[in-house]
Length: 278
Image 1 (cartoon, helix red, strand yellow):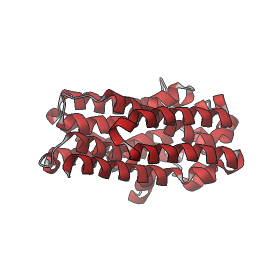
Image 2 (cartoon, one colour):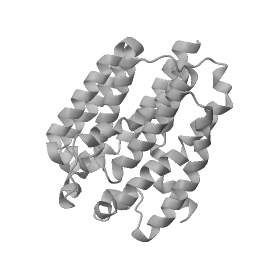
Image 3 (cartoon, helix red, strand yellow):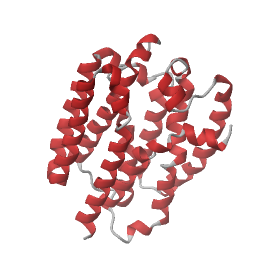
């Protein structure tokens, strides 16, 4: 399997979904001197290619039957043939196992966060749980995307926990997953793959996402002030736009989603830097 194919499988445009929360968690708890710590940077490296290859590689292996009939997977994302599965497993292990050595140097809180990340990442797509085929459980399992943030936060301040921010981040992750399932409703129904979106339907799924984003937005106002309003209203507007465009154009709107998420992470990171280090 070529390096280009492995890179494509890891979805580089989505790397910020793991690296971004880690960076935000680190700057939210660390000091300027902490940001030069080699262990911090090594952990950050893990949440680039290696962790994303794990998340999306395992997903592509166990989603083969669904993906082969899904134009979004074949054209827009990576498609992994059955013959490529053994090689992909080997590369996932080769890129992930060496980073387990970091666990010997992390506080136990960060170890728990990484352990949950690995469990949720694997069991989201693979048996015996295969959460992605269990409506509502699939949404809940996507709190895996806040685990890098908790890893970074507790790496530098293991004794502190900001529960409102953690809950808000978890709700945001659940909404992100549920919205991502909306363009796949037709193909998932065709493949008899139940998801939260196939269970609720197009409009109700968007209402569900709208509700989660609203609660997350309200929880973050005390921490982010005006930025919470900007980000919150952006996501709510995206849900409304998707509803207005309808199912036939949902994927076209969805293609804006990674860009919005990346911009959100960028603004959130620098807002925290400004608050803590100015």
